[in-house]
Length: 79
Image (cartoon, rainbow, N blue to C red):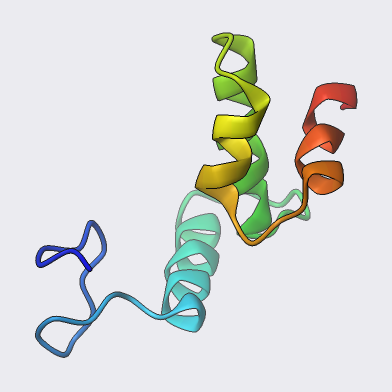
């Protein structure tokens, strides 16, 4: 377990919760006046797509995106 989180939570030694990340994302959409219907999952999709475009192995991407299945990860190759 990492001692320093990329996205630390309010409690020492804890990471940002999924719901807190969603709230930050939603607030950023409003502040940036982005009206397109997107979700925080869009970030995951973009991340995976950029890795694939940079020829990162699909199995490695799957490890990064766990607990998603290979079938879910492979979806990024078709979109």
